[in-house]
Image (cartoon, rainbow, N blue to C red; front, side, top):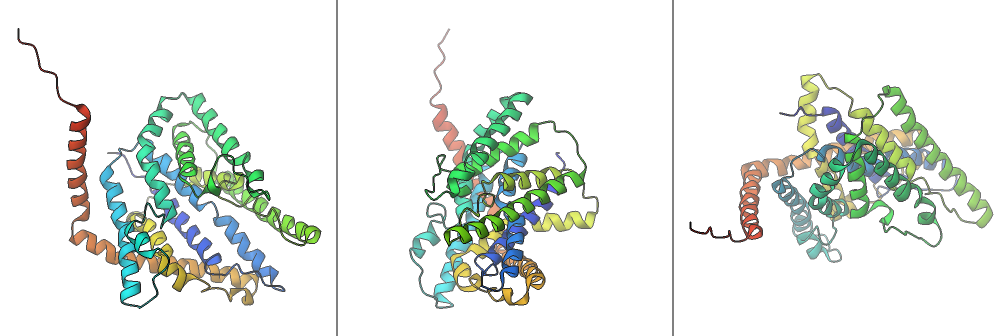
Length: 376
């Protein structure tokens, strides 16, 4: 049996904490820019930049861990039921118990969370899951040199070459990457992560990966500040500040790759730490689902932290980090209810049985009738 990589599981938890930071800054309003309080704005933007690689981390991990994994449709079915739990049940409780208004197209978004992109990451991930076996075959069929070339080509073409057109005034996106909010970008990250798993890389100390990560963060952050200040003074409005701050930006990809290579080397030897990681890792995706649930997003998270700027840069950073940690804990605690119900109803076994039955029928249809053997 293959040994579990607890370092990768730990990175999943950190990546989800990064997403909490992004949501506290953005939807929570902590990154609010107010004249006279630019210090807090810049401080929050530093945290924003440091956490912006979170989606890239998850995309790379999916390929890194999935290239050698056996694809099980039952796990996708179980994951869909988890998404449906929060989209449908959460909306039902919000409208009928808390008497909140019905949001635009909410019945359709609640009942069809994938096709209506209620949770954009999951909708894109479904496409990656379906195509992953074929992406794996491609990567495994390549030679060592070809995998390195493929990784480099994808990085240059999809990240480096798109960063200037993407933030230009024309909004050009010649590859249709959607600034990273797309099935295509997650597929590219999957292939890059799979290549990293199968490439023999030179071993470097942990300090080297940490330095690369922080240098990329500082470069992205300083560029944003200086470019926005320059264009504001020249044109009267801030322009081009997001060149190095997006999911597809090269510095963010470098941040994600650095952290992936760092954490895949980490050996968690404490049994207590292993147990905690095993407990938290399966629920990490639910942390995202809870906070992005439309009613939680609009009624609980929106502008909940907009007064943090009054505290000054240092306290503002501390409050954002503390709020992100509390948000993570609350969402995890909320998911315990879902975990309990799923275990009582034996959801995993039911998904395995149904998917196994459907797979058997599908294989029979695809194989077609067997030719009759001629009698001697």
